[in-house]
Length: 108
Image (tube, rainbow, N blue to C red; front, side, top):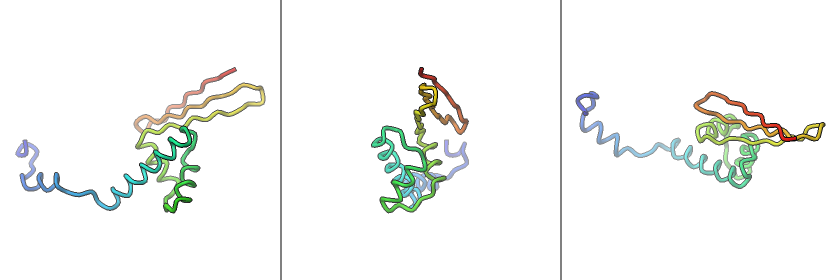
């Protein structure tokens, strides 16, 4: 199989034994923190609020990065917005393979 892929045996073994870089380790640690914050907020917080929480805990991170990590993790945001007519609009925002799918459920 290595010959078919054009990879040397020593190169493959060094790839298997390679440690994670510092940036990958930080990314995984931040993703765990994001997941914890999302679970504590019952999936109500979006990227701006999660960024605030991370910054309060001493993490230096941009809102765009938090949003990107949330998309990679498949975290969906659920919003309930009261309307002037007394109905509730439940917006579920799902990101599937970088394609945005919006689903709107009306509860009257």
